[in-house]
Amino acid sequence: MAAYPTHSGRVAIITGAAGGLGRHFAPALAAAGCDIAIADLAPADEVVAQVEALGRRAYSEICDLSDAEQVTGFANRVLAHFGRCDILVNNAAFMPLIPLSELSLAQFRKFEAINVEAPLLLAQALAPSMLKHGYGRIVQITSSTVGSPMPGFLSYVTTKMAGIGLVRALAAELSDKGIMVNGLSPGLTKTAESEKNLPPALFEAVKGKQLIKRTEVPTDLCGALLFLTSESCNFITGQNLNCDGGHLF
Ligand SMILES: NC(=O)c1ccc[n+]([C@@H]2O[C@H](COP(=O)([O-])OP(=O)(O)OC[C@H]3O[C@@H](n4cnc5c(N)ncnc54)[C@H](O)[C@@H]3O)[C@@H](O)[C@H]2O)c1
Image (cartoon, rainbow, N blue to C red; front, side, top):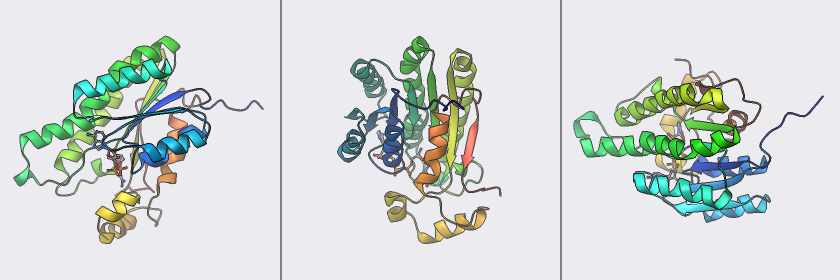
């Protein structure tokens, strides 16, 4: 039986890969054969070193995704550096908890800029390269919170839901030309950052709502991301894949 093709020779952008989940996504895609470009507010030196140790090329920029000019500039510099981009993983997100009574319009617009506008601008800047090569995979990292919002999550859930709308609308424009666009929806996942910032009781509560009674870890998501960004994912588009231990209620 012929081996299924995967990622050999592909170039992948992952936003927000200096920390959190993105720090795990970058080496997973590099190990599958991708060169990696990272945009993050924080330096991504450690992740760059990991990618290079896997024999792949890496490019990273300090980039504020809430600034449209920086977003488009980053995409164009990645295209100039690698000559192409095949995979876009919109992973970075703005996610502080702010209740309705305290939310300002300026704050809400920051959620929109990072969680919705940056993914749109990146897709717009990178689609011509993907179309030229007849191949593209765009993955929007969404969130299981859209199915079960909690107080304080108003701007996060609203913009994460908009991200699912973006997936469906981009898929309608691009899928027939070889670009698959899908969402990947994690449940509450233990990373160095989430473990430090969130109360243990929240992890226990979410675990209780999952069919699989353990806390999600980043490697639970890597396999799904590898599939959605691979050549094997060539007839699935416009979907949002829940990878959350079966968070059904
Ligand atoms: N960790 C979870 O439990 C969980 C659950 C559901 C969904 N998600 C989603 O997964 C994705 C990653 O989450 P995470 O937990 O790794 O988050 P995180 O906060 O740990 O990491 C996010 C990364 O994005 C970067 N970033 C933030 N704002 C930026 C900006 N304006 N410009 C450039 N970079 C910026 C940060 O510097 C950081 O490296 C997000 O889309 C989040 O909504 C995470």
